[in-house]
Length: 106
Image 1 (cartoon, one colour):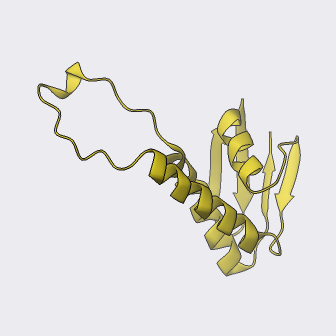
Image 2: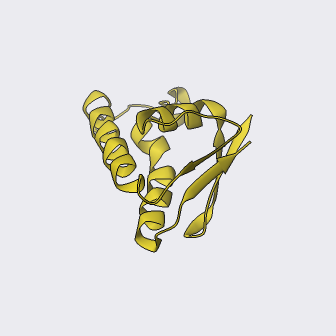
């Protein structure tokens, strides 16, 4: 299932339900059929999400090792929270700057 986040300050953001549940949980929201992050809630939501991204970086530091052989021979690393959260974090920041709520729906 896909969840669409909307804000007057940014393009619509569509994400998988499991990621939406994770990101909303980090900021203290629950995924319902519809929901909103108000302009008053945005600063705290951004801080919480930024902290979670920093924690994820500690667990999954940037890969600096050299992999021998063709790239096709190695498995792709799954995206960690920091990589998956950035589009949502960008939307929250733009919304805060513009004074717009972020809404979602199924």
